[in-house]
Length: 145
Length: 128
Image (cartoon, rainbow over all chains, first blue to last red; front, side, top):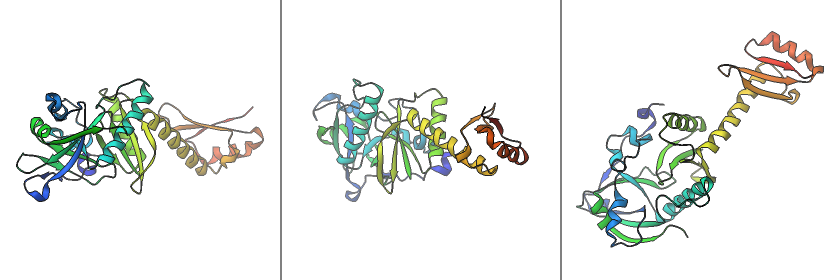
């Protein structure tokens, strides 16, 4: 099925007004908000040379964003899924995405954007400069419960 | 039914409503060589609720091929009017996987005659 038929048009929302502000949740490797390495966890898929798949291959500019989640609970659910898959591969394998989740407040005036297609898994795409996204982190919590 | 294909970074690579599209996506991705079968997982949803644990792509494809093969065989048997309860064994084979080898009890040779009349696209063998 060609991507143009399979994928809905972009529903990217620029955070330009208070009404568009929202919190999102992203996996991070660092454990402290003031860790200078935090910005590295907000590199776009393109910057990390991730192959374009599915929606990223079909929608121009999508690969300049990165994955996040609608709620902390759904981010934790995905982390548990990754952990289960990793253990299935190798029981001692570390979790590639780190073991923490950053709560990120996407505020007005920072050039942030997001796309939430309403999928039940809570996966969304966010855009922003790595340093700005790192500055927008409110807290970092453990991914595992 | 809805399926989400995820990677080990937590991203949802794509979503599909049917398992055949998931299989086509996974096979295409594995064939281009950039991703291994254990670097991608599949989540299954029904009415917005998760069904079962995450599956590695390799596990999903094994399950899908089995189910797909069973469905193809069931349709083929229906076409040639053989009761599936009669069949001892059935597999898809042939250079383009266009044949179905089935094994039926020798006392049901009459069924084989019916097959020979009704279909030239299947291959059959009798049990000893």
